Image 1 (cartoon, rainbow, N blue to C red):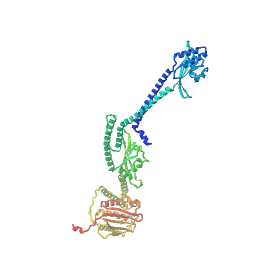
Image 2 (cartoon, rainbow, N blue to C red):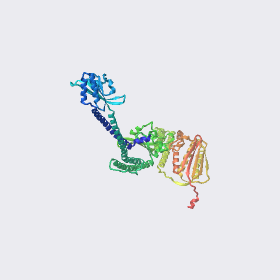
Image 3 (cartoon, rainbow, N blue to C red):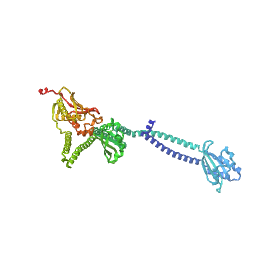
Image 4 (cartoon, rainbow, N blue to C red):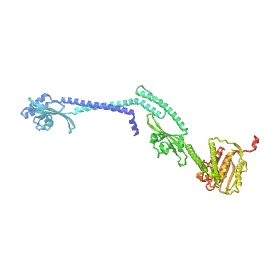
Length: 617
């Protein structure tokens, strides 16, 4: 079925068929006119051949005017027998009363004396005019020409009529033969013309077929072929235009491929994600960074998907709002499911010169760190304000009390001054800690690095805390605790800043003492691993909830805020410790079980060092 359709769809066949149909229609029209004229002419000629001579009409008129009917009938028979015309099949004579008076056919003489029922005869007798028509005899399947002529006397009165009946089969037989010859010749002409039309259409469509093949090659990306130009007619000019088009398309394709490769290279190496959509908001282009930011493995998972679904903003925006809205930038929080990600999405419509918007471009920028830093900055400012407000309020209250006369009371005034001094020292320590953190953040902190025996330094720091225990043995209000040491026997030489490392150990030990129960044991360890020295300090305090472990080194963070402020902490000690350890190239972390105590670990880089190496130098 498809092959037949393709056959009829060929322009070559169409040209041949149209030409043949036009020729056939022309020949049919000419043949119809020709046959019609031929029929009319032959009938007229035939009618002329069957006309009776005027003397016969006159003789019949005289006989019909006689009063002797019998004698007149014999004369009429004699007159009709003398008519010698082979084209006339029968001649009937009727008087003015419509009675048959004679017939030229011997087989029909029984009608003589009968009255006619023929309407034409009656009309002729009545109107004195001739009447003729072609009739078809169904009995013998023949066509006849019937002509009724009035017979008049000398006074032009109707005395009767003559009915001539002639067979038309001979006439139509000649017409049919001529028609058959004509249509046979027309059929041969149509066949020859159809053959010639096929040849001509083939010559006409051959360049078109070559152009079709060339355009198919161009569509496949093959621009090597050329269409033969066979003349300077319209088809030749069209062939030249196709060749020119092939060159132009090849140049445009090369330029487009170059631009596409350049665009793909730019999109692939961009640090921002890029999404492009059609006018319905369905994604058509996506780069690798956008796939990474959206957590998609393959671009096929996004191509064809609506951008508002890809960015999960369908509940807030529609595609039309993104295209028409003046809001071209928005923050999209994609932190759901434990994924810490915040994106800045910038939308720009793809607009043609006519003003028609054919799509949308969305640039995604990861602002997670900026947003986190902004939140931390705001939190930091809030914490600093809160931490400074409390001692300042306390100092302000005691100063007002002293100004109101409390300085005169020798018992109360020293107590107020002591509180003011403690709160002032607390603020000074906090400010010094903030300054230290600020210098570390800005990178202006100077390290006085030197190789130190970490075991001796660690022992020295812990010995100071042992002295505090001995000093407060007789003080019932001081907390009792024990420090246990589990150190490696090997001397470990590490390059550190002694003062800052001491500050780190002091911060951790002070926290261990604060949060350990009275009589508790603080366990310290020192060991060597591959290229690292590990120090640990364990207490038997309340421990740290699991949800707070990740924030224990944040600035101003306290697990139990009320208890920490009561014990005088600033919330910056562990933050400073982490920054110092990071500056020394190490790491610090904590392991804790709530209700069972905490263990802080410090890892420092270590290269085996022997004292005799100095002598080798």
